[in-house]
Image 1 (cartoon, helix red, strand yellow):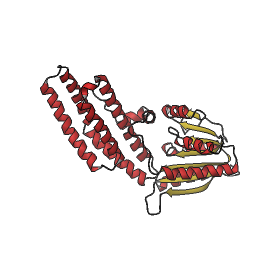
Image 2 (spheres, rainbow, N blue to C red):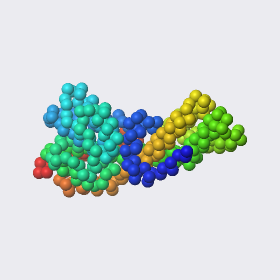
Image 3 (spheres, rainbow, N blue to C red):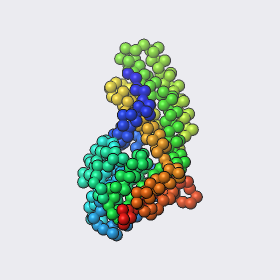
Image 4 (spheres, rainbow, N blue to C red):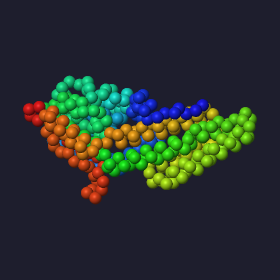
Length: 332
């Protein structure tokens, strides 16, 4: 039983985001929140407050919603004020929308592409996206302008090329690449199988020793990689996985062979999905030229730009994201 030789292209061709959100929705090993979350939350709450100052009846669309981070924030914000806006989430991943429907049953979840939104024109007071709309092509901006109501607003937080999050993603991707190149999990699978066979007197001791030695050699390489990047989130998560493997390997008789292999398969799937996510984030990140084109497209569509700026914690720190905020004009 060998692990599948998944590549990024394999995952993408079979809806990589659906696989990622399916794993993330179960609280997978690589599910995490960044320290930048508080800055983004503050920005969204300011927008919600502004909308409430204009009307208590708000219809909001979250484009490329993932599993509903913004919908969760909006629900929390408005519930505290005894207000129930109409919230819609659109994402191409059925796993992401399914997760939203289970956790937030009042939200209207739609599985669709941002480039072809299945909504009537002039429908939404607010269209939002956090690290989502930049994955789509320019048709998503056209669609945003179409579904916005008169006096409606759109606000996007997008990945910043060569910014702090971008560089973090590059680092995590390098760690995962080195880990997978060590072939540790395949050696692990083989050693587990041989050890179970040895205990059941089905595997010669010499064969087990060969597999055990290969596993230990691979583990040494992995340890060197994770020590080098010990402060990085990917390394910390992989260290937890290695600790679990060590316990199971020492106490292999306490587990069913099938359960061991299922756990290992789930682990490799999570690592591949995380690698897909990091690479996708890097590819989607926008530089100044790309943002300029997006702004130009908004203007051509009749939108008025309220604000375009890099987001950062302080003037001394690196940029972490782009903020784009626009609204429909009275003639739109």
